[in-house]
Length: 160
Image (cartoon, rainbow, N blue to C red; front, side):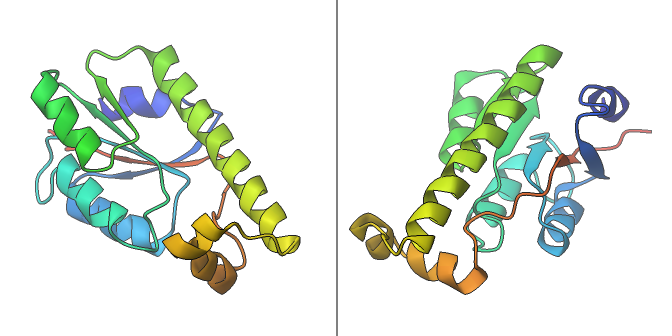
């Protein structure tokens, strides 16, 4: 599965692979990626725990996470989405759908970055941003999102 996934966005994204959720979380916090594609069923920490950890960490909470898994039942999908996954794709997945979802998440990040950059530079932070705490994070880092072109991380269980 990892080899297939690495071939899907070949030439479009720079990939980094972690073979379990715990290592994936560590790698994410060391080198913040643009996106994460994670399996749900992994050793150490599963995809739900990856979502819980990263979506509750200020350094990584903005990173879109796509859960890609064989767990196709509605309850599993809802669990993933409630824990912060931005998308939930079931195996076998359509390669084109994965690429479209990644591209749409990139576009959404660009729009949000442009919006917050414009409002910061112009000094027009909206009251909603001030109330939600986004303003302090933006001012503290100089930008709301760090977008590294073509950078994606995939977490998966490695089966020998």
